[in-house]
Length: 159
Image (cartoon, rainbow, N blue to C red):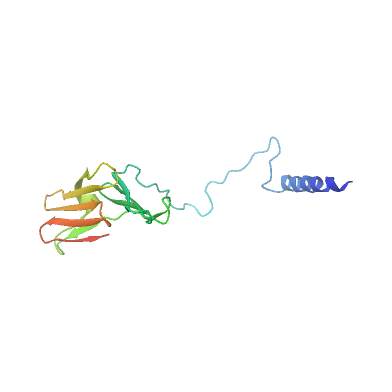
């Protein structure tokens, strides 16, 4: 046996050992059992973020590594330190008077989106309570996202 044929012989032995082991390559005509559930089942449901975006943006300077998207009337994703790394999935407001009602922005408002310039990188989202009690206005074109509320004395806070 020459020196160059030894690696091939070792490889052939590994293949033969793998075929002869349980879970190795099944022989012709053998039936293979398929497990009924994955290990650790049931596991968690797969999750996909909302793909329809109303607005996308980043800072106006070239040093920022933060990107964001708006979908469904709320800040839907914030990406940092790269555009493929989601760090925040959804930021929405909860509006309450502290005793008689509590509204979630995604559940209890309807919204409109207005482009603020031709870049496609800035927008204004107006979310109005379904009962007309208040309107939340969010501008996504400033150095930071800026929110203001119009309506009664309800308090708004990010969730």
